[in-house]
Amino acid sequence: AQRVTQPEKLLSVFKGAPVELKCNYSYSGSPELFWYVQYSRQRLQLLLRHISRESIKGFTADLNKGETSFHLKKPFAQEEDSAMYYCALSGSGGTSYGKLTFGQGTILTVHP
Amino acid sequence: DTEVTQTPKHLVMGMTNKKSLKCEQHMGHRAMYWYKQKAKKPPELMFVYSYEKLSINESVPSRFSPECPNSSLLNLHLHALQPEDSALYLCASSSQPSGANVLTFGAGSRLTVL
Image (cartoon, rainbow over all chains, first blue to last red; front, side, top):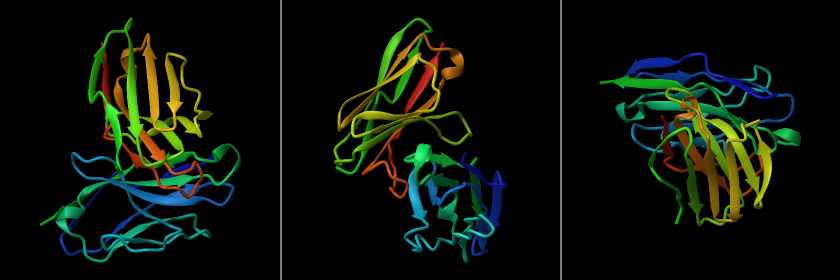
């Protein structure tokens, strides 16, 4: 079975402060991990994925297989970062092939 | 065209009605998905179609019946639904149904069952 845990339902920071959204996963194989974001009144969209190892909108995420984590970080939060963030895991084979499982989501609010 | 289009945007139906949700993409994607999302909850996978064949059914009740007429279209037929089936139904597609592929989501069809 594959599982994704986001321990924080809500996260509030002030503009310019660092932000970290936590994500832990459980999967017996080699997972593919993603962060999806949903801004107000917009559709769910990809923010970044671990295999790309890129920074999008100043966000980065590193896969730590030892700690089974994929935390999302940004050094200086902006008001436009306020959104719902979902960590998601896709299985790489077997019955999990093509199955994207979402965590419960974290609502990030960045105050001016 | 880089979007997934879902119709209708809103649907209200009674428990004895038969209706369908439609999803369309013209990106050449060969995997298509149905997700159900309740308020303030994450999307939950219902079905995956891979190359127009049903590859994953997450033990969804038979009152939901998916159909993939061709590589661009995905339908979800609804019959004898219950009020607890009221939710946002999201369609998504990806180039292939492999783990590393990114899903492109539609805006959703908001279903209310009376």
